[in-house]
Image (cartoon, rainbow, N blue to C red; front, side):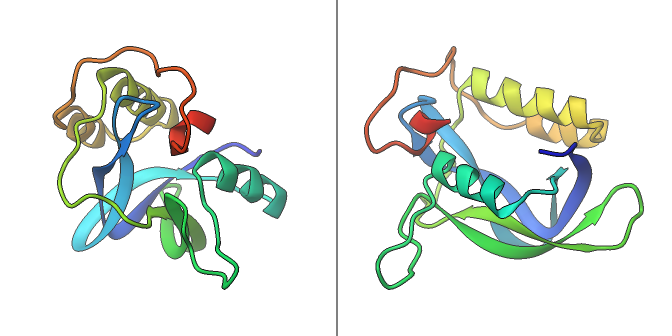
Amino acid sequence: MKRARPAVLDNYRLCFPIYSEYWGGGIADIVYDPGKYVAGALFDLTEADMSVLDLKVDRRLDDAGREIGTYKRIEVTVNPLDRGQPVVAVAYQGTNPERYHIPPTQHYMDLVIQGAYALGLSMMWIAYLQSFAVRPGGKPRGRGTGDVSSRL
């Protein structure tokens, strides 16, 4: 995988509406929400890389080609923060998320925040990440069955 570039996805917001037994709390998702934005990373991935990522996030298709896993691929346009041209990209979005906030564990959120720091995202974004309600929790639980994050 090539190095990540910081980027912004406009008209979506970050939320934690999917419960993961592996993490013991909510895991991240994006939801269409005009006027909001999500800061994150833009990677240059091959189709082979995407297939590995599909397995890790439990993206599956049924025989008719419908998305039935925990996450589905969606096409989005992101804006690199290096002032490059907008890029058409693939993002993962929950296929059937809960409709309310499921607090992520402190450990999960710490990893998200560490990634934001490492990517050089703004302190305003990092403060926003720190504002989410979390539940106490350490490292992930052992492998579960049927849980998206058990394969991460």
